[in-house]
Length: 380
Length: 201
Image 1 (cartoon, rainbow over the protein chains, first blue to last red):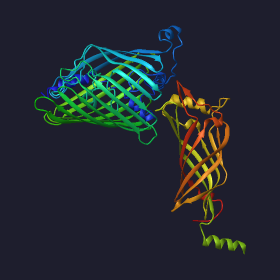
Image 2 (image 1 turned 180 degrees about the horizontal axis):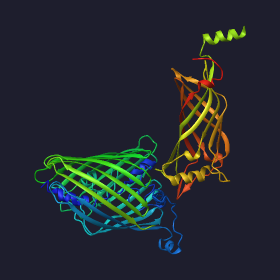
Image 3 (image 1 turned 135 degrees about the vertical axis):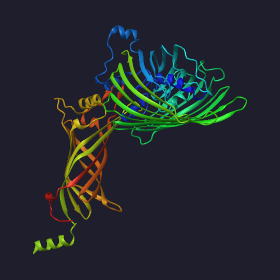
Image 4 (image 1 turned 90 degrees about the vertical axis):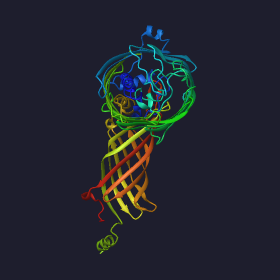
């Protein structure tokens, strides 16, 4: 049963997003996401400053000029509504030891919107449609959520009380350490941070020049399997250690309970940047307790490290290594590594190619994969 | 007779007074400026700092004379090409479209030895900094370490843009602070043939 998870893992890999991590902005002294993104958790729509950075870091290195078209201004409520359509197309070729080659094309559309109502109140949402679902791997102790072709990955009401304090309620992915957009990496896929994991939640973001604190409370998203509707809370806290905006260390702590499974996660992480180089690292320790007739507690360790170098601002290669171990009775031991190259041609077009090789240390099977991805979005 | 006395004196106390022209090329100058948005600060760096001074050893420590430093604006990089362009345009370009180098000049400065460290000295170098063609008084504390014939100097200070008539740059709601933190670091070498006041080590 444990090894039968390989095809599922390959399918999951097939929809990994290998966009160059926005945490990589640490190399330029951006210690948090709120500077460039509409929501302080990062990901999703960019604010005007973020769009100017997006443009500046693309191959064409242009200036961002907000539209002055009267019709568009009126339709966007004089700039209060930000929205775009995004498409990510991905062709992946993968295999594993003694398994046939698998070629797969997946396409996913996103509609992303955010409306500022004034007084710091905002509603933001992301709706997704796809041709193939890609749930995170189902595990013996934690089944995958039920995917749907159309899914609301985020719907949040937010209130930015001050420039550095925001409350948010709705559904979204939970806050996470280095916050990479690649959902296939162990620190995400094995900790309920998959694509369809959008728990109902209330969270607070409080940040300053050297700190970022993010407590959160969450309940079920509604698409979990019976007995796994999780409720809990946690907090993410990080600090710019040297005060130069390039050495952020933090920890994410979470406790979740459901009728059949409890889990506790402690995840230290770091984002370090120096010149054109950067390092992203995270190690998540998850203790799970199955609450069936014979409760079993076992530990999972998931590690991730990535080293990247911005050869050009728009061209960023990186190399990543991962490790996953799960204790008995669900023993697993995986190592993985890969290369990736991301080219931001324009703010609207990003091309990336990546390789990833996973090796199961228990049965000796290896699963390599090569992925070509094109991400497109409409201007805003 | 007087000359003989001087020679005998210098021979007996060889490190009392001597001076040398010290030049540094490829020094590092970096800056950091905060912005109105928490989480964004702008940093830049140049490795083209050039400095020159006459250095004299005396019983009280070091004495710096004729301190001159310059930094080509085009050598300052922030890691983002467009931001570099903005910086040159908003900060360093004069009304007539020129981008003059940053220049610093100072007169005599005494550097005292650090307590318990015979090869380390500290001093406050006060002079004039010229930026975008505007010259204003500027002062920077320097720490100097003497190793063989090399002088390794580090210093940090703050520049107020408004002192030079420069407005705080702003980009889509993100505005930099008026005060820019500077840090410099360079290693200068004595040129043996330019010893200016005799003596020997």
